[in-house]
Image (cartoon, rainbow, N blue to C red; front, side, top):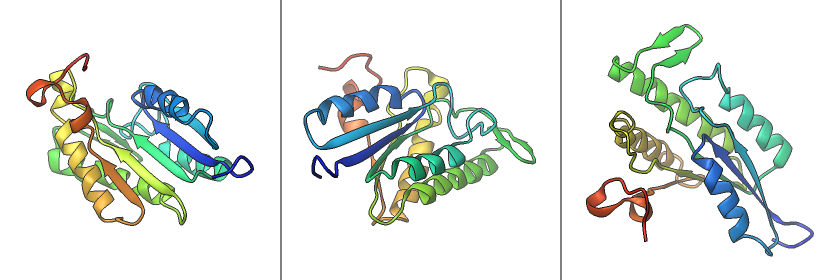
Length: 174
């Protein structure tokens, strides 16, 4: 990257991305890089009627032409999935997982373009049991889809940096 041709970073996702984008921008301050944040609080992949992330990210890719894409989704996705044909209840576990994984794959295919490095951050340990119940499954789906695209997408496990004592939730870490 140079001042004339800076590294273009896109950080996108639900409210969890809202802290990541500014932190990355701060870390890259003074370097030939720009960070664009596309954060939509209270969204995720479960409800395309709220934010249609495939369309949103297609527009981000076209408008920003990022070199690096950093994604984080899932903090709001422990709910029924809205589809064009209706709803898939989260209690229909296998069907829900298949549809959610399809959505992960769709997003990866949109952003994994030649010359673009994609980093998808898994979900950290959550404080609320209802959220924590789906975190390991969502992370496993993200890791599986990233492994299917080894030259394009890297799954980042947040555990080593964010897990509290004994792997549990911690509001603050040293």
